[in-house]
Length: 104
Image (cartoon, rainbow, N blue to C red; front, side, top):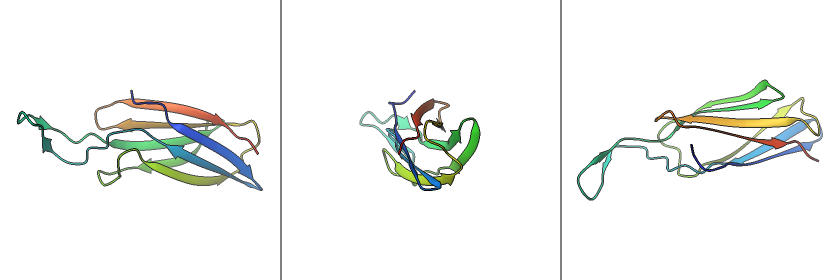
């Protein structure tokens, strides 16, 4: 399991803006360490976002996403106090899920 994400959700008019900072190594290709051991790609593949259990985001990442990715998105229908949950799964099957409460 990765380090906790920083998730912020703010209601701005009819839109809820969500900002996410993930901590992940995001190794995008085969590399060799100093001892000659092969290290396989290790990156986040799927990111999902829900608001009160309703899916508001589904993203498939590839190997070209940088280390510790940051992104933001907007959706409509959120209210102050609703829970926004962001979760991801990486190429090794590791998972992480964190949440934020929508504020003003």
